[in-house]
Amino acid sequence: MKGRRPRPLDDGDSGEARVSGHLSWAKPIENKRAFWLAQSATITFMSIISNCTASVIQDAAKSLVNGNLVAFPTETVYGLGADASNEKAVARIYEVKGRPVDHPLIVHISSINNLDKWAKNIPEYAIKLAKAFWPGPLTLVLPRTSIAKDFITGGQDTVAIRVPSHTLANQLLKEFESLGGCGVAAPSANRFGKVSPTNSEAVEEEIAKFLSESDQILDGGQSHIGIESTIIDCTKGVPIVLRPGSVTLEMVENLLGQKLGDLDSSNREIKISGSFETHYSPNAHVVLNGITNPGDGFIALEEIPTPTGAIRLASPRDNVDYAKALYCALRKADSKGIKTVNVITPAEHGIGLAINNRLFKAAKVL
Ligand code: TXA
Ligand code: MG
Image (cartoon, rainbow, N blue to C red; front, side):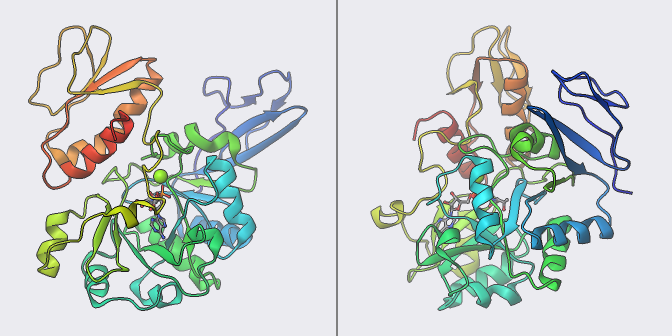
């Protein structure tokens, strides 16, 4: 069963959807949680599908082949997917996200076996990384082949590739490839500069109103890592971490038995996550390790007590839990109308480095 009932924009959760400004009532679409949009006189819906069975995934893969967008869960965050070989479909990703068109996208594939379709001159250390961490939260930046067009790479000669481990994502990619597709371009499914979604409700909140009736959001529960993949530049003699993530520096150095390169000025010219002023930002003002006033939101490890009058938004047990809870907590601040959130940053080891990287950007201190 594809799951869910209609979910009206303007109304509680009644069996039928009422559209704001229109006195019309519409019958629910069976087996779908439909999202109703009032666009002047026309009414459209896009579907948000839970209980993603094999047939739902096949339909979604066909929909991608037909040039539609499909938002899907990954173990890091939810992605907004399009056929990476279809320029029009990819252009819609940029429209829906409100993202600058020269900002490159990650191509998602189902297995390392498809890597050489997209990338060439792959160094030995990149193969080692892929074998160790794929499927998983690691993206490799490599020299591109001719199928990685400028509309994916932002005109750069490199392409970013990832094999996600989330079962639903992996099945979707397999189905898509079985229909002749080569890869799915998928940025995080949020509006540009905003907080990445880690569940289907957050995707709906971010972008549903920009999607069209043939697009879909697949619901696969909460992303279990909660922050975006580690991105490693593999185009130089030594690997360079462009974006820290849950595959940590220590894990990479231990595997390769070598120190990683520095992010020098030549790398900084590449348009990578967070190179814009606002990134991972909720509407609330994020303060790091500051003074908490009554009514402020507060995020810190469980062992740190809540200051008097503050609204506790998350109490993660450890850094792994912190990564998983962070984006939901920032969203919660906005849904509660909180103006300022004070965040006590975790110690900068392991995944703590990635958490602080996102927090510095959310607080605009980078
Ligand atoms: O965990 C993730 O990586 C998620 C899930 C959906 O897979 N995706 C994601 O995509 O975070 P996005 O577009 O929100 O962030 C990817 C970052 C972008 O900032 C982009 O600039 C950078 O990867 N990127 C893409 N291609 C690149 C390239 N060829 N060289 C350097 N950076 C690149
Ligand atoms: Mg993103």
